[in-house]
Amino acid sequence: MTKPARHARAGRTRANRADSGNAALELVIVAPILLALLSLVIAAGRTTVAQGSVDAAARDAARQASIALTPAAAQTAGLVSARAALLQDGLDCSPAVVIDTSQFTSVPVGRPAAVTAVVICAVPLANLALPGLPGTASLSARFTSPLDTYRSR
Image (tube, rainbow, N blue to C red):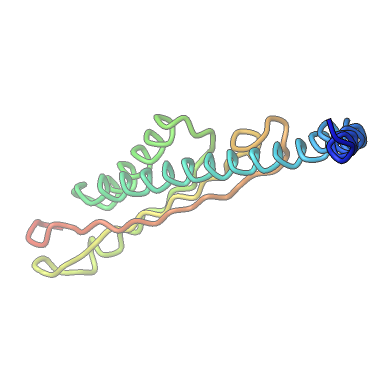
């Protein structure tokens, strides 16, 4: 073996010795950051799924209210439907459901009318992100469903 080859190999070994332990230190620094990012991604995904459940509850409430025959029946049907949809999706909240049935009586038969449902749900962050996390996320949705144009109101 020639002298330059021996020196090159010795230089690599010294460099490797100087780098030993750096990987563990880098892992200790980077791991918490990666875990925090992963937690944020999971929380965002769970919030999106919960928002979809609230959207579905508003859609169901508006649809059930639109097929009711009276404004009082529409209010009841919309409220029951929204609560059932949220319960079925496993969303732990006490929803505020507002059903706008003003067009039941104000719009004459033969003209287009609609019923609007608004569902507001305060979901605990402990259910969405991390267990034990304080606070709530307020999720809301609005949906409008048409009334049959030629049915009696």
